[in-house]
Length: 486
Image 1 (cartoon, rainbow, N blue to C red):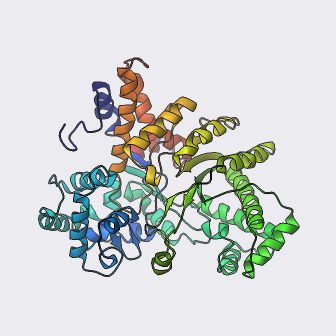
Image 2 (image 1 turned 180 degrees about the vertical axis):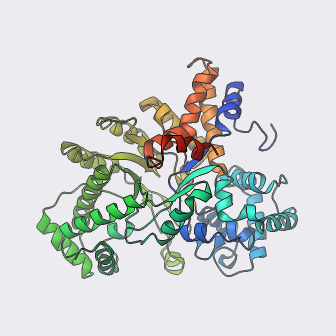
Image 3 (image 1 turned 135 degrees about the vertical axis):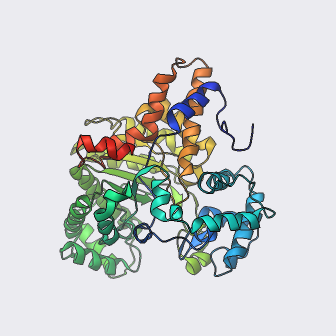
């Protein structure tokens, strides 16, 4: 089979028909990413391919950075202030060694899909690719909004702190009629969760100021967050996202919570038990708010962050020093949380992603116990996340989802990326999906009815996300078709 040819990842005729006739042309809803709203609004061309591929300012692709370190590249040419061309060459040296890593395939897919460059990327071809790519990057087609629009993306959900004024979302909202897609906020309250951080007290002051609530108790945190949900909802927000590295379900009284909050504000030591009490109460609050506003609550669980402490102090978070988490009983504690919240009918639509694939079966079966309450597939096992973002683990996630629930209702793929060039990951996922269904046909496990299976492919690729999240509920039905298909 040709490298990244028309049939790559497609192992049988049914898979090929499903991809080419049903998946290939479907639009994209990127419901979780880390694109910067300011960059989308300002819509400036990137200086060169290093800036869009490896790093631009503080932000960059820590997937790539990890591989470069493994290849002995000095930090100056990774996150440092080294020459952009030398960084590009260092990435070329690295990619030559990365056969079997998804980045090898993604890198070449991005060159082909965006730049029309079919050459194998290596040290020898790098100078020519550098010139070709950089010439194209200065054209209008490679401005951020056109990269999104030309990738057939209809909605982009960024990741935003509750205290954000969503300034650039407001500006983009005024221009969205001409952009061909929507840029929407998604709330991620990491700073509210991290009560042990020295800046917690200052953060509560910011939250109080933007919400108009004087925060002096846990209940006032509830009130402030309610105000922020109102604001985000008006701005088109329909999702929240929550990082739980670890979790233990421990209940607390309001007076205990007030004392814990006071300790956090004063930078006093908080015990493990107090930390668990605070997180449990905060999650209960956030679940109620997500349910009240009809949002979807995303949980990213069981990761280990910033393991290399000296480099964390030097470079900060999200720079490539993380790993798969190993809390074996995390789903058990989540079950207790959801059991309590079901008693008061406060379980929202939920998507769970675990960085540890050992959790997937437990999560899938747990969620099956909470599917009641109306609506299709309210509880979803999210796509393979981060280190699981590979063809093999995408396939595993699809198999677990299909065997324990209704794969036809799955909301599908997301980029979880800071890069405007990441959209071929949707193509990659769709090929894996079509191959998964094609294998079922080949093994006689489902009918060889391509139209029937093609509808599933279209739904998982796009339609389910469109209907599940409700991003276009304010658009008239006769306008929706035009907006989505044009």
